[in-house]
Length: 320
Image (cartoon, rainbow, N blue to C red; front, side, top):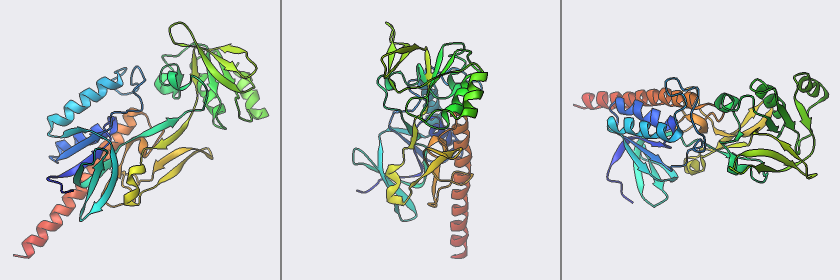
């Protein structure tokens, strides 16, 4: 399918990272298209935190503001899902779910990740509200609440030790894991953290749909008002297979917690001309860090275009 226009850059993914990168490129007077599927990871959250000057802003408002800033510098926003990307000549062609195609000289991938939660009844419905993952994102709002940590692996003890900073009323549910080692158990108990063994089968809610407790396989319920857990963090990058880009495992403390696109310090992938930033490249980064990484990637990407344009100008000058 022919493409009537080639953008300098197509940004795939319109979250905080994608929009920050697009603003940077727009201010560099590049033609930019942002393609966004409209499914931000943090959509269920009430607010974005630790983002200086934007503290507590809703994810939806942050994106509305970011989109307006992109278009103010001439950038374009298009709703859609990219299903494929391929090399064509010196640039790239991306295919959307509706069958349309768009060409670009460079790509900036900022599609983020998906959270694959433990298969516990009712957990997904409360994700981002009362079921939480990051204390720096949600700990202040959940401070002093009866809080549980649903173990999913060896890192859950670390998670429990960290969440204890925000509440004195903390319970670690070992769930289907082997539980803490004797040394870890001593550390948890020394800080007043309860340890409850046994599989968790579901969560209970109150009349307002808020978390009220954790239900165990033996039928008992432990009251909690907040529940921290960790799922598998899977990069949204399957559409890049046509370029030969595959994800690599993400390890923390020797434990695999998900996947990511492998990049260098500037965000450049193993495919020349393709950069990645945000959670798709660094799944544990908060919003402000993801946005900053995209600004850096966009600046390096722009310099790559400048280098190419300079080379072509020199060649043309020498040719006559």
